[in-house]
Image 1 (tube, one colour):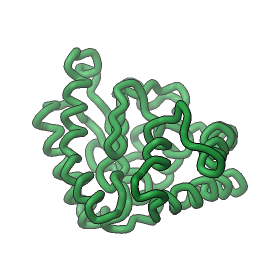
Image 2 (image 1 turned 180 degrees about the horizontal axis):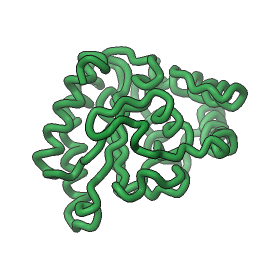
Image 3 (image 1 turned 90 degrees about the horizontal axis):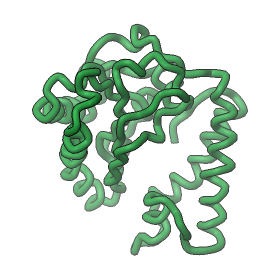
Image 4 (image 1 turned 30 degrees about the vertical axis):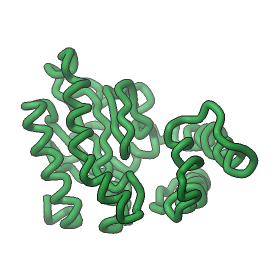
Length: 230
């Protein structure tokens, strides 16, 4: 792992998976890194560590699975706290989407994620990052840190769905976010948007980076098919 990943990321992932093995013995049978590491844009101490974790089929129907995944999320609290104290934002930690073993080879838009966590947010029902953009990152530059090489996962990133998905994302997420930042306080907004707009520190450097470079990245991919980091 350490030969393929930035040293601090390798250490964080090793610790994360070690804790996962204690609370879900045999539960995570494969795991891969996407995001800035897969794009060659990782910045130590600043970038998120984005993971796709495959849950063994025998764990999928266990009634205590979500509770255990919540505990795994809580293992990131020290990283979240340290990130917030240092002013680098609450997402400088392992962010993970969990999918079932039997769903790995499905077209990405047909996968029903088991759960996910991003920063301080745990979603027990889904995962935004199970989408054509992240799956393209997985196929093009993903690094397997457990299980078989990515090429053996037989994933279907649905390249034909990439541009339509981005168009929808720009229209339904980024355009309303820009309008709310410009015109009014949040109304019925999601947790992330609410946090961005109501932070006592106002618009932080991380927020500005997210809001300016996020849609710019989407536009770049829409025009060229290439995915780039912030």
